[in-house]
Amino acid sequence: MSCLYVVPTPIGNLGDITVRALETLKTVDFIAAEDTRVTQKLLTHFEIAKPLVSCYEHNERMRSAEIIARIAGGESCALVTDAGTPAVSDPGELLVAACLDAGVRVVPLPGACAAICALSACGLPTGRFCFEGFLSVNKRDRRDRLASLKNEQRTMIFYEAPHKLSYTLKDLYAAFGDRRITLCRELTKIYEEFVRTTLAEAVERYCTPDAKIKGEFVLILEGAAEEEIEAEVASLDLTQDIRSVVRDAKKAGISRNEAYRAALEEKRKKQAKAEE
Image (cartoon, rainbow, N blue to C red; front, side, top):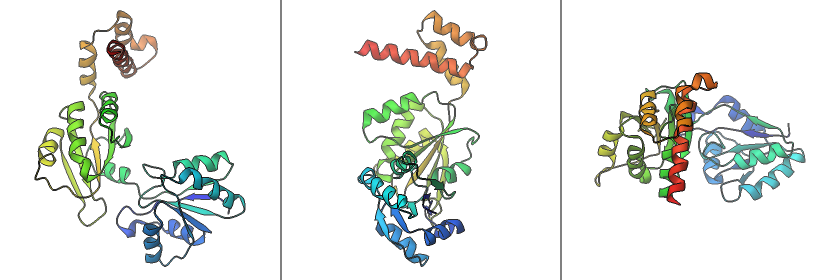
């Protein structure tokens, strides 16, 4: 069938690839890969021989047109990244969107995803969560993003590289205080590790000159307790109208949490205007 298959690949342990993923890789006409060298090793391991084209961050927009033209001509394509599910903090988002815009069928396969793997064993609430992926390398943008999440009550998931872990932990601690956090390292690999701790302890452990940090990390951070949000709202210098919204949320037809967020957003707008 001429379509684009979105195919997750193992994040470490090759045994995690699915039977359906292997069948798809064997039957498509060609494979669009983040790094053709990495994908070739995977294909060689499973004795699969298929043509590869590169599709990564810096050529995805240009490559999308070529891939869509080939699919429109009757070929089928499997989209893969180096590890995990394409388009989730990995290349693929632009290609998928372009295919859909062009009327090309997109078929997603379930499979490995570091965020969900880490979440399932983190020990923090998993009923509601938000995925933030990699934070910006720009210090101001990163801190602004974290400030906007201060009152997020859902469990938060971040990805981080080892060389940036200490900076991120310091910024998380500055933004959120001493909340619970689980640091998940080298998932599904030989040295897989889960460190269930607090932000203060994590800073003490990983932010020293002699700290040896290796492997890719998934950070699972506890969301804000309702008491934290209420305390911050109570301390705000807000208009009487906003205070009324917070007090009378039920009457206004919105949840208290929505009212809190509206109040905090009003505070941020006032601060930004004052700084102009």
